[in-house]
Image (spheres, one colour):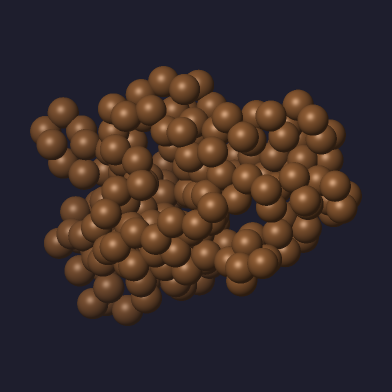
Length: 192
């Protein structure tokens, strides 16, 4: 068994203990894909048919606004699940891009395979629900922070609770994520 698959299973098991037959079923559908820095996992407008467990590297989710500006909405590191949620679950064109910001190693689960496992195994379906719940909690937390805190407070929140963002994300992407201009971010950083 590949190390990446084992790592992915350990991640799942921490969220919800799976039965041996469920583990065997998951292992039967896993594959591995590597992406070079700047390579796309999903492009805006395409239908997302794969879910990616990040084994190593960093990925970002973003969309282009009406002025062709990139608006970063999410970053994922090791032990994250990278997926165009809207597209993957609705099987409609993606509203966002997902792009590697570092060389990336992933474990892949195809939409069709996952749906079959959800139908066959109650514990896998429960695992999926628990992962979605965690994701929704994170989304709401970030949404409230970005809407209620000043630029300085947003940056301080990132330093305190998500230091890997400062270490691994280019400043232009971080500024976009925080909803501030790059110049404002530079000014806030210099005041530290």
